[in-house]
Image (cartoon, rainbow, N blue to C red; front, side):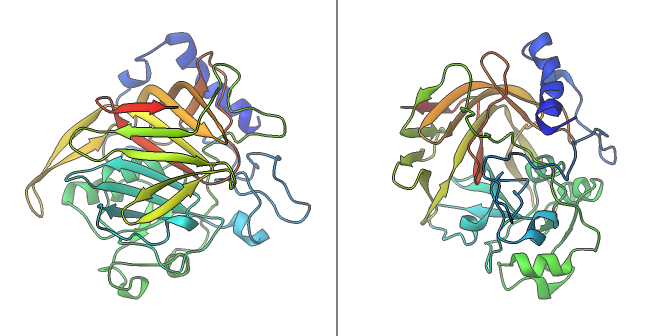
Length: 335
């Protein structure tokens, strides 16, 4: 079964059963990781951008820099970004997941595979959203500790990682690098499962309800809006994150419930947390177009499927992508 067939099979229950089915499935308990076939990790997600000499990367569907990069393990880093932060390394990330955190900040989960970054950070603590987003990709994670309960969840997952307390040589202050993380990773790590069904030659983003787009805005209560604009000359979407401009071939907004987590150790505080299991509305922009549909992720080890309004898979353009976890109270607009 190829990548596209696998995603169609995973999506079929959502189309038949309708809204809410995925949300009714229990979340994995600590120490109990759902076992599911995430697909053939050696399969190429798309042949659209294939090169005669360089294979396509599983996260981008675009040619990698070197043949060895296609078969190596990915690395991932959580970052905490405020409007005053100057994050480093995001331009080299193949995939970035964004959760709206407390005090007008973003909790980012940056995944690196096809490109290297000499400086990544500021590195922050591990959170449940990192574990739930990364489990299917199996990266080696560099993170700055975290609340006791979150650390327990990480230890009970199949993920492996390193903190400054584990090995200070991997970090330089609040920063790390892909080279340092790959050196610290145990031998035998596998390349990531393709999480997106990238467009092949002649594929549109969606079969139904495809619309031209030049601007995407996600507005959350109490915080500044995140505004992405399409740069037609460079064929990328761009926005400001902290004090830097980032670009993406595709931006995918998944609308979902957020809940408040009360943390006790090492210090009492309340944190917003995106519930990435279940299903909900998706709005994707890729190239000069947008499409709406539904997303579905039944559990920890399952790929998140993206479908248009008729149930057919979305096909973002090859390249890097940002996945925005928007709360149900957010206003998501495209024009």
